[in-house]
Image (cartoon, rainbow, N blue to C red; front, top):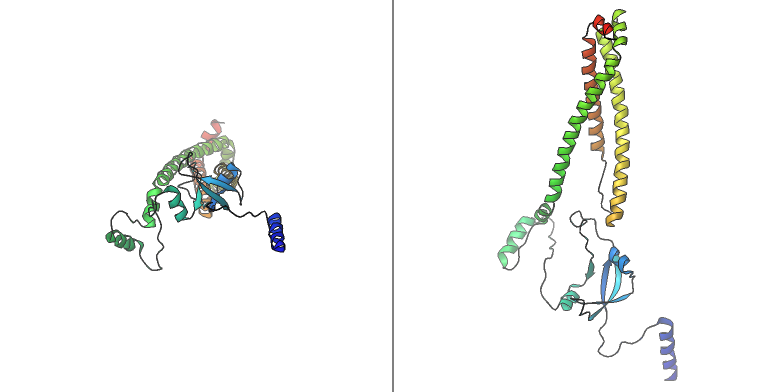
Length: 279
């Protein structure tokens, strides 16, 4: 018996384990969101008290996991902190067994979610089943409005930039009217003058497109770095895709060449003596 007591004492001393008193409740296991754990300075193995209100913290809980929530655009703007626990423990804590707000159902491959939702709604009352696509569409309406607003701003910006680019090309070509007059006097054809000016405009457009793509990449990186740190999430707020780069490059070249061609034809259509008299 003395040997057994000595062994138990050594085990308690080495592991720190103590037998729970009679009637004591064993701590339940919970998982904390990383932001909540960081704010409360909690680590795995820490013990805390839980309750439905601040004056009734009667349940003991042990932090068994700290997790990073999945990126979700619909919840990233909310200043919520989450904790996960087993459903029976939550029901016992709230004193409301057999009651949930919402839950998800995983369907077998090949089963239509709309058909399954209709069948579930016909079985009983007191709940409402929705397909996941319908819930996603309902929660993303705000983002659709924002997306349309951004598209409208983009169209206005493109139109304004096209007008601005045309004005710049007209001013640039107007400064070279003396060169155009001299080339016309020496017998250079209008087509050659127009081709040279259009080629110069295309080169400027390509350089501008490269600089614009580089600026977009840097701006996207800065945006993601700031907002990911601000909201403690891995959600991608800004992304420069190949389609966007291709569209921007083609649009830049088309607008640049179009503005250069219009300005060049305007210059080439003017008589040499008129160009010379305006210098």
